Length: 139
Image 1 (spheres, rainbow, N blue to C red):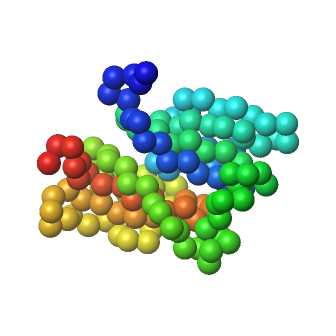
Image 2: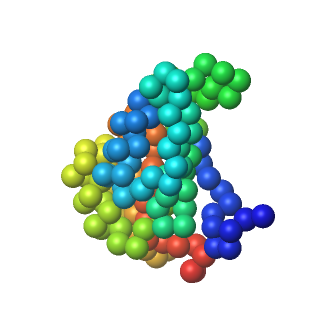
């Protein structure tokens, strides 16, 4: 049973330094920790970060059955096979926050013809993130 109004889609990411990623994602993007579970190797077994009603789950890179199915961006020449889109209320302010935290901007902030505004950036380990004020649920 799901909680009403809770997201039922949660992107999952792996980071070489998951502890640093959690701190950076909070500083740059405004995520807050919902749950963080350490492993026995000073890494992160599982973490849940929330922003609004959305959540991402992440953990440390591991050599296990799931880990063998996932490449890190630096193993694919910095390319990603997917990205995450996050709706934010004030996209300009979010963009400025991400820039101040050192996010690598790959598609600069722009007002979109179809409504809203958006930008795309990479986090320190190369994962691709898009943020925008366009909310398809409200359209």
